[in-house]
Image 1 (cartoon, rainbow, N blue to C red):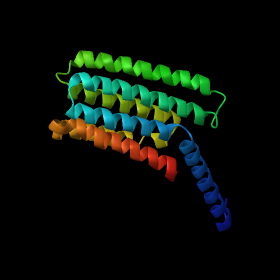
Image 2: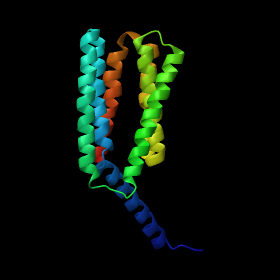
Image 3: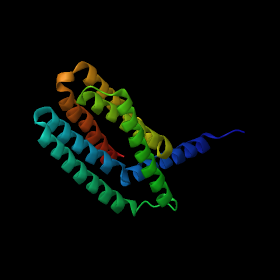
Amino acid sequence: MNISPKEAEEALASIHNVTQKTRHSIAAGGASISLIATGIVWLIGFTATQFLTAPLVVWIWIVTSIVGSVFAIFMGLRTGKRVRITSSAMMGKRIAIFWVLLALFAAAAIAVAHPTDGKQITTLIILFAMIGQMGMGLLLSFSATWWTVPVAAVALIGYFFAPGWFYLWMGLLGGGVMIALGLYIRFRW
């Protein structure tokens, strides 16, 4: 079968249009909001962990996590009304079950590994969270997977090479990467 240059050009233009529509759908969805909210929680929580005492840090993490989660859920529901598929309720349940099971497996792994300090526990939690996000990305959108590797790498580099500044490192670089990526997806896609 021979394809004329004009037909090839039209096919490439169609592929480009589908790619752009997919990117716009992702940008219009809750992915960017979730990344920005999580990045802000990490930025505040890890920076507080670096500089403040334990009782106050616990409350900062609790409050920022609740506020960030409520905001992300509210915005996700709001934007989700524009992007709806028939099986979204079932998919939502499966995603929730996946994250609950992953959290249970992470807790079991931490109990078995018996980390000796907060940095080890934090690094394991971050790695499990990135594994979970990568799993979600592989199921829902390949474009949502690539950023998990740099965040995991930042966590490992900070853990091994900047242990004295690990929490600040994670706040600025881990949280910063998520905020920057969320903003990029939201405004550039």
